[in-house]
Image 1: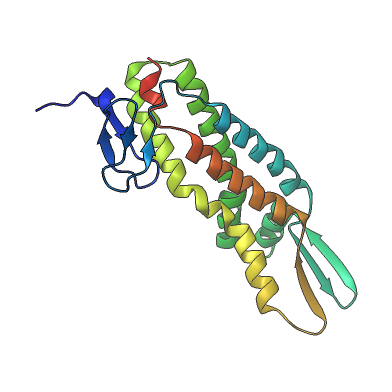
Image 2: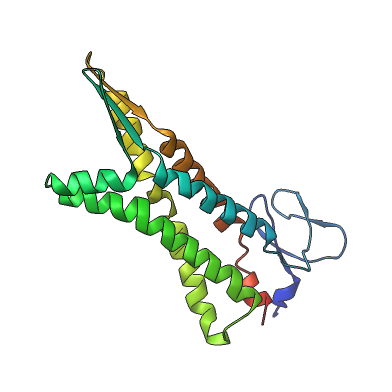
Length: 198
């Protein structure tokens, strides 16, 4: 027996697939109320994405790492840290931070903007598969953007020498917020939107 795809509902709690039975739909697995959304909206995803972009600006302007050594204070931005590591021969680490903290976040912004615009103004039916692939690729690489914040946290926790102090700068908080809101924007994007707008 073939079931119409439009009559299938996904439970937002346990992800179980249920058949639409009308007004009073309950999940067959967890018993939660399920509501059928007739209109797909992108406003929430746009709001999270814009917030992430705004937070990404101070993340690159303000220092990510503040080092206090023998009374001397050194501040380093994300890009400044990449340049410093490159100049001192730490090429692999410099490239990892460059990709994880600069290139990947910008690519995620571009991909999300593309997806949000393309579901409203579709380019063509043949693009559906590539849109799904783009979305899931972005979901996979998303958490790796936090590598800078993890490095700062590890350095601050491990280095407890008397004359050296490492502090996370303003950029660390801004960058963490940017990554967090980017993940929210991706999560708020309903992949059914790719099929909804034809």
